[in-house]
Image (cartoon, rainbow, N blue to C red):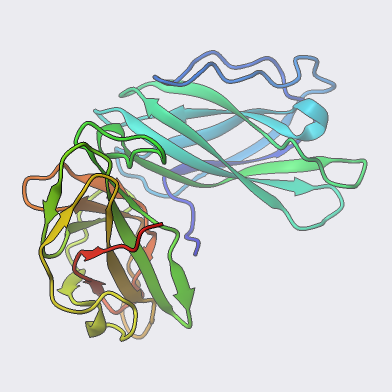
Length: 297
């Protein structure tokens, strides 16, 4: 599912030249590789600012493009927050032939507060036509506090518990996204009941009008997010999951789109911010199922 861009300075560029790298880096990131340092012409840049006008607007701009046969762009990210943020940016490259555009994603693991850093995004596989890529644009930007970002696959946070959301499933207006909890630590992890949720909008503010319901069957049956909660004792390496269920039905009123959900696995647990891209329509309802033991992989 996709949502309109938020908190973004959206740029559309004719891919004619990708000059030398813009200085700057994000904490924990290697210095991004420079695009082709031999420009063939001056890039023509057309940019408009869209999305939220809140003070915490996260801003991304494309500053140069055209390296490597028109498949490389240099961009800048500004963190307007008071804490480090991890940014996931989706770019769209358009070929000269008019064929379908191709999306690619770039992640900056930690941008310091009120800092502007640079990075590059590269389409390594070019289109079949000789003219190459002719345009690149920012599609979406999603930022979460670095301290609350889901741990990358294969790593284990200091808590010994890794919480993340999957890509979900959508059919006929019904949405199902599972929260996953992996005990990656050395001790047994005890959990019971439902994860605690806080729904956040594009400006990371609480969305008060959303009603959070326990038991996924209150929205739809046979999603796996139903049944009574049971106490679980997860041994190291074992997993649990809890389903998020909603419908994007639009009737009267204003549709609610909320990209973020802050999750507490149980009372006293550290929060994790996931990005399920909630498009709740005008239903105003989000159902959450109880934690259940996952089958071994």
